[in-house]
Structure formats: structure tokens, C-alpha cells
Amino acid sequence: MNTTEAIQKRRSIRHYDPAFNISEKDIRELIALAMLSATSYNIQHWKFVVITDPKLREAIRAASFDQSQVTDASSLILVCTDIKAWEKDMPRKWKDAPKEVSDFMVARSKVFYESKDQLQRDEAIRSASFAAQTLVLSAISKGYETGIMIGFEPEKVAKLINLPNNFIISNFVVIGKGIEEPFLRGGQLPIEEVLIKDRF
Ligand SMILES: Cc1cc2nc3c(=O)[nH]c(=O)nc-3n(C[C@H](O)[C@H](O)[C@H](O)COP(=O)(O)O)c2cc1C
Image (cartoon, rainbow, N blue to C red; front, side, top):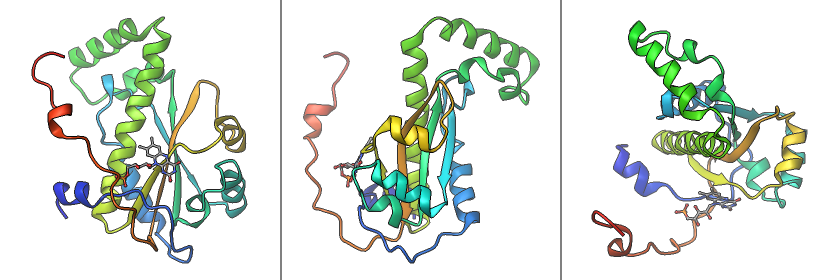
């Protein structure tokens, strides 16, 4: 399936076959693809928390307005993101680049983010969002159905997964075999309203 087809095929699926299994190898491969998403200064804010414990899935479902996909989809991945990733391990994130590039990126990233709380948070969510979309499109290309979710109680879920300080759960991604046709698309706004030339 090419990218255009995957984008057109993607719909939010809410009901899944609980008996359907996706191998750990496939999930690992999908996460490895998501990790190739663009990220400012190559910061890679993301952690992909794959929830495999059925009891934990139940508890997360209870904190997610009882949405059935949380327990029934083959895979539940919590895309978490580290607000402070910009100050962690930057030389390691540039270790394969030429030294002058690496030195420049490490120094510039510090200047760019230091003392800018809103920007640090925005960037963490941005990186996680790109990664979630890559994860979803990769899963669709492999023939699975997916859903992205923010319908959960963040404090409760954070507690359930021992979310570290300064991390946010950006969104959930569910992947599996859908057992229903999606709703008709709600309707896209006309491109004339959305595509703006040069200035508002
Ligand atoms: C950030 C985000 C959070 C969402 N949260 C939920 C959710 O908690 N439960 C749900 O059923 N759908 C959720 N959705 C799916 C949206 O309702 C859906 O993307 C939208 O209606 C467009 O439909 P489509 O994805 O099928 O094109 C979410 C989508 C996004 C992007």
C-alpha cells in the first residue's frame, strides 16, 4: 500500500476483535518506524508504552470512559512525551553526525529551549503527534486498523503506568482488527477555507 492509499484508508476504528493478535515483532517494527518521525533538534521526546497486562488494560479502560478499544484492540500504545528531553543526552542524539554539526546542534538546542516552558511543552506534544501519525500510517500499511485517543483521565492513567515527572501522555494509539465499518466521515472543510496563500 502506498502512502496516499494509507492516508485515504485511515479511519478511527472504535470496535476491535479481541481474539486477534499482533506479534511483538510487528509492534516493534511499527515503533521503529514511528521513531523515524521528524523531531526538532532530533530530541526524540517520545516513549511508547505498550500495555500488555490485561488487568492494567482493564484499569486504563475504566479511566478512559469505558471505551472498549482500550481492552479489545490487539495493541494499546500510550505515546508519552518528555518535556525535558531537550536537556537530556543531546550529544548521544547527535553522535553519528560530523563533530562540527553535532557540537552546533547540542549548543543551539540548549539556547533554543532553556527557560521557555511553553515551548518545551509544545515541542514535546508536537514530536509525539508526528510519531503517533507515523505509527498509525505504518500500521495501516501493514493491513491493520487503528485509532488515536485522548478520551482518558490523564492523572489516573499517569498513576497506573508510573509516569515519570515532566512526562505527558500525549495520546493513545490502538491497533488491531476492526469489527465494524467506520462512521461516514464527518465531512472535511472545503480546501478553499483551509488553503491560505501567503497571509491570513
Ligand atoms: C488527538 C485525538 C484524540 C481522539 N480521541 C478519541 C477518543 O478518545 N475516542 C474516540 O473514539 N475517537 C477519538 N479520536 C478520533 C476522532 O474522533 C476522529 O479522528 C475524527 O472524528 C475524524 O474521523 P477519522 O479519524 O475517522 O477520519 C481522536 C482523534 C484525535 C486526533
